[in-house]
Image (cartoon, rainbow, N blue to C red; front, side, top):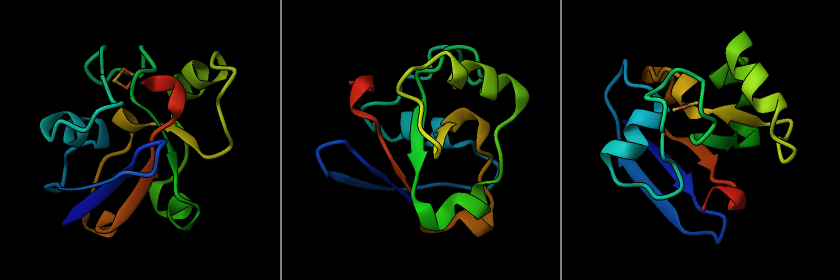
Length: 105
Ligand code: FES
């Protein structure tokens, strides 16, 4: 299964994942720039911010309370913003597309 990260300048990185990984880890493992994951996946740093492609909003579910709090502090947060460490990947996410925000570079 794969997920695609699209950088703010339009560059696509399609990378493989295994079920059970979170989206931040997949980005780090594959050297996707724009995702730092400084807190290791605790929804505490906000450096794994992505915006989810409209088609994938339902499949990725909703924000966790801790995630919501982090995102609220970011003035550039959008309706579709998520912390990628809080998205646990399963078979239903094959083909997932997320965008990387410009502010994270
Ligand atoms: Fe720190 Fe996601 S890795 S908030």
